[in-house]
Amino acid sequence: MTSLKGTLRAQMGDGDEGLVAVLHQTVMPAMFVMIVFSYMLLTFLRNLCANIEVGEVFTKDNLRLIRGIGFTLVSYNLANIVIGFWSSAVMGNYLGENAILKNGLSFSKTASSVQFDLPQYFISNPGGLLAGCLVLMLTEAFRQGLALKTENDLTV
Image (cartoon, rainbow, N blue to C red; front, side, top):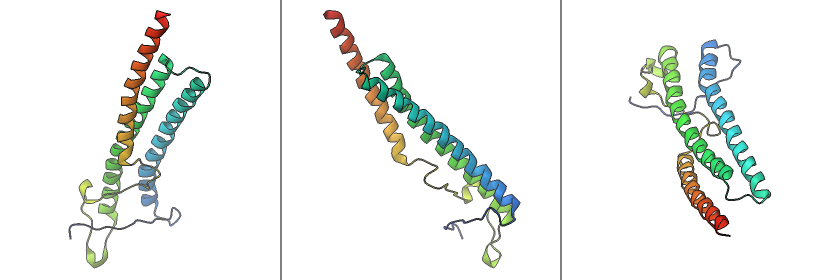
């Protein structure tokens, strides 16, 4: 047998302290990353909207904020890729040592034998990386707009 597919459902209060510890090791880092990057992204967006509301569109501050949004999106997606591999390794190790399937089969202890996917609301989708790259490209358009605005202000 080369692969199994299914959903692991675990109740935190079922008495298996090892499983609870492994679930904490895999879910908590993903939650922490999601909270930190969400805070950063929402802070950048709030500041950008506040600047635009007062009529400051093409400014160095807005350019920095848009660049920060792009880097935050890209970094969040890359961090989630790393967390996904790490979670698979941790869960694969636990299942390799503690799980026995029907008919006496057991999991291999290699990280590649288990693909442990965190719930979708903890991780980003592949489009998030593309969105981050597009925002970084938009930053270049804002930089050129700022250069035109500065040139226009100097000619008056």
